[in-house]
Length: 165
Length: 389
Image (tube, rainbow over all chains, first blue to last red; front, side, top):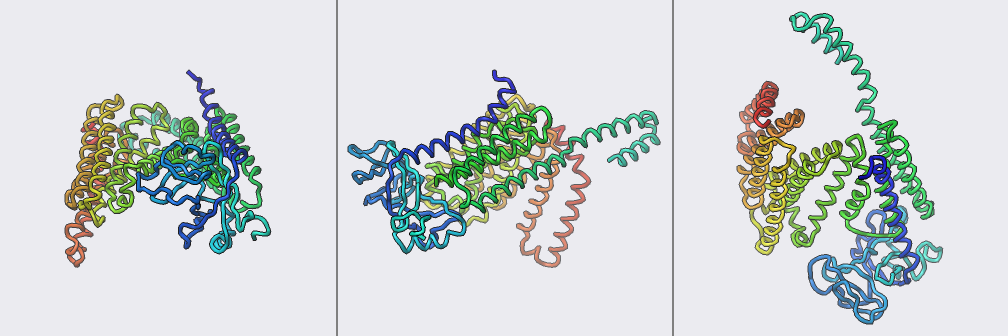
């Protein structure tokens, strides 16, 4: 049985350790994943900006994505090489690069990478650029299919660079 | 308070109840006790904790306002240093000063949420709100457990409840009927009803910590009343008691499962050793009245039965609270009963109440109700207490 002193110490350390692990995991995906660029568009062009982030849908280049109206949040996989889509947790044979996610609704695949946080005052100009120019998202994808957003690209350049401004 | 006591003592001496020396000893004891309790004034504690919450919100706002000027690594480092500093402060003051200990825990609790948000922003992650709430609660369970004042456990329990409510709401079983939850408030009432039973059960069987028990008790009552209000208010819903055929199966499945879970939770509560036999009977009656109003609210559109069962449920809850010595809550529920009676009066005599005579009658009803409440609330409390103890 843990003494009260040790229990308090554990209670104070637990959140710090848990958040440290979460940050390390995110940084691991960021640092070790393979870079992939995918075009994006606003799924509601009138309201691309929600608060301080950009909401968009990703064009995975696969036609029949989430074709069935299965139960919501059914696990699914989008294979990026070669392009294909499959329901379930196991990637199709021969697929060398894939992203795990879920079918939120028919034709809507989500993998936790559909949001890009932006500074408050950049909202409107960035929304205009994403709508009027060629916008894409730079993802870091690990071997086990976990993906993370690295950057937002306008005409192939990071939105932060002077060329994209 | 002291002046009130002096007057009472004078009155008791003149009535021959106590002697002068006894009065003096009582006065000295009360003065010393008041001085001691002043040191640990709950008002002071409350303001210190409120101040801590406001400062932490201010810090978060500052970070948000200067978001783009701070490098990501610095933001993360600052956040983690803050967490370590607060944990260290709480550790250092755990035996010396409970106000500083609890304030550090409150900061730590809030900064954990801030850090989760920061990680989300830096790494551009998305996810449902319930996952965030449940993750936050799971890593801060110890912080809530060791807090000595009610605020942190109360906030933690609220976040946990929010997380569970959203989890149920977004579960595949219910996701097909999600849009109709807003049209059928009674269904959300059932979710809260189940959670209310689960909270009461966990509180009485699993928790040994008094502060956390207090937080669970407060939230059990809040969501119980919330559930009741949703059942009662569902008459505003355009579809009350008339489900479209394509939804009825899903709604019935959802309702049956939640009903069953609530039944299990309340049944297990009956076997808890915390309550007396009378209190257990009271809990069962409250449960049955809730079942009744849930049934009426979802399957029929009878305004009379909703009002009747709401009043019965409130009365049973008031009696139960009197039985466990919660005088203020008992009084609060009595006022709610009075208010519901008044609404019932307007419901029943809506058009008449708009006439001059109706308004006079309404005014007289309100005044009479207030007088009756003022005159009989103490006797009612004593009667209820005896009934259920």
